[in-house]
Image 1 (cartoon, rainbow, N blue to C red):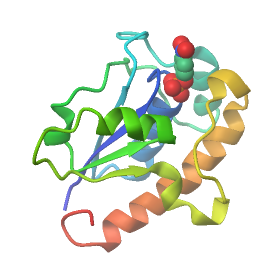
Image 2: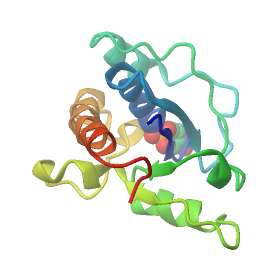
Image 3: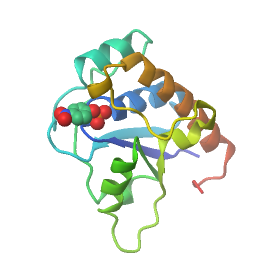
Image 4: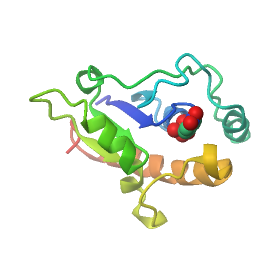
Length: 153
Ligand code: 4NP
């Protein structure tokens, strides 16, 4: 069954659009979007160096535009995935009363990578390393979604 997945980072110009693009490529049978907990880059395309590194792997991010995460997203998606603990805290701060949409870290789906968050390449400049981690974790996520029942648990 098609699942609606929202990837969330801080700026929505590096990590979450990359995760959205990789997920779209790996799992076209599901639907995906991304958002940032901050509003600094609303309307902007993904960061140029991230677009270039993704394009080298045939993941095209140029059509994406940044938006800010909003409380209504809890009702629009089946699963919300953050890149680090700050993202998770900022997402949870907007959870509506009574909503039980699962919120998870992307790295939970790549235990073999031994990472507890997706480092922010806006600061580390390691765009390829982050894409490597995202590709592994998204593959784990897709396995999880397609191997499980109709809702995420
Ligand atoms: P992202 O990276 O959260 O992976 O999109 C960032 C992009 C921009 C900024 C911070 C993080 N910024 O401070 O503008």
